[in-house]
Length: 456
Image (tube, rainbow, N blue to C red; front, side):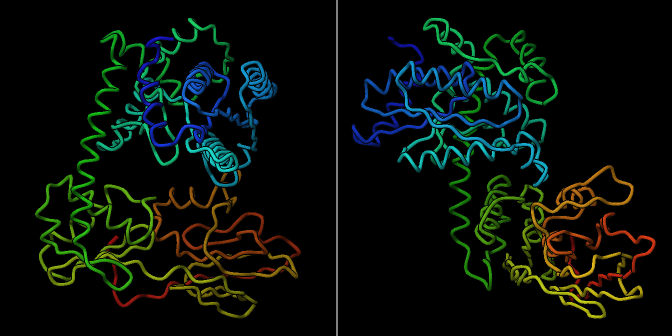
């Protein structure tokens, strides 16, 4: 095979060096397309030379009637012909997308990687390998640029993240096509890849060809730029982590000298803040550059009475010459609600009565004998509001109304059984609208004023 796909072979040699021969077990994600079939072919050849056991893992997303099963059967037959182990999984992608308010692409990725991680664990595989290549990376860079991403986003797809590794990330699609032709590697085509109904397909079909006209090596050059940006981003991350390590403990959080934040270069200071926020709340989800800027504005401001609310319930405030980042207690546990009573839920009071009460009020017709509770939102909550075209996820409704994550997470939701019926700032579900011949009751949501009003 000579030097064909040499960067991928060198990358695999690096992975193998971390595991003794005879204990090397790799799981390859194989859809049946050209890229993943090249990956499986290369891995089987390399595996025989380096004492590695290869398992092909195929996930059926149940999105394309007929052809989804065709792809699965194709991968299974190829594994039998090539002497490769095969494992398959499946999931209802559309159902997950509807239940959680995800796009189809997000739901597919969630199901696929959950399957790959489980399959790798069951087979004691050290690595999960995917066939992402340089063209995929270039597309990701452009999409992130359109979204206004910083250097971390413009660095594209990481070659290694956790247990997932991508041997082809420095190899172009044209090189894979040449490899497939040279070795007569069979593959199947996903017909949806030809449609311009998704941003990535539109980019692939209409933008990337123009970039190649400008420079035939556009993809390779972008791949090199991504590698440079990733190295620079990692260096800034290290510098930011060193500054974040200088933070001290605070009640339910951390505190750091404002001089550390204001004295650091802007890019490093922003990453330091994001590092601190993640340490306090335990994750980076929902945290953005805007939140980092909010913290830095508190650090830079004159005076010590500045406070800001951030996602995930985080609170940042000035305490003398220090900036404190804290995380309030978690949302209250669900509480029962009965007619004529008021339930306390965090900073809210929820009343159910025969007349309208204080605060935001909704008229409802509720089924008899079904328990009522007040709780926080759930990821599968969906409501059909008056004037809307069907149900929408609670998360999307909050986003449409400008309700930030930290506000959303403490909103009280009235539930009829397990079904969300009403929530302040959102509305009441049409399924519980007053109806002729049915008793009407009123649910009122009253927010208790805190001692301090915080900037948003």
